[in-house]
Image (cartoon, rainbow, N blue to C red; front, side, top):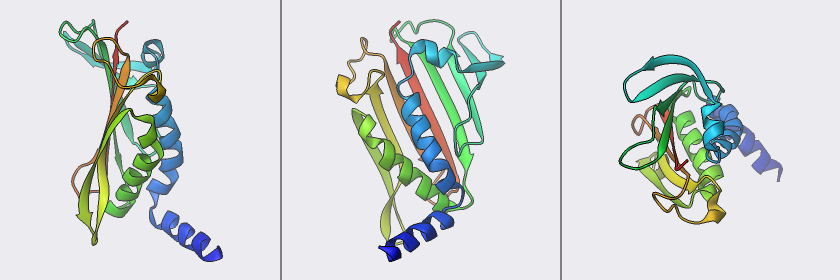
Length: 180
């Protein structure tokens, strides 16, 4: 028992930023995936720029493990999909590639059960396969609501990936689609 606790402490210490970011980011990511349209709009901060189709705004909240986030929101309901669409983009950088791997794997591990549809991307690193990216989507009402029925379900989609296999840089994208 003591040996496993010591090993756990060493792994957490070695992972640097990722160890500190994971618990907060896990909870935050889970909460973000269930935000309603009004809740997502409430996260819009100061205007950064706009074009004819969308606004780019600061993200009012901090997301553990990420250095900068921007929230893109459509000015009107998309004419093809009939959804109101929002896109959160955050980037981050860990102390090294191993810390980034640990962050991706831990976020995948702690959030994968919230997605009604999901997929992980792997790379062969250090003699074993490691999760370096993942994608998932779920109805805003939660996984228990079932699969996403496009055109009639409010849903969120997440894409999390490293810049490349041995990179210490990573990106998070959350796409919300609301029928309202």
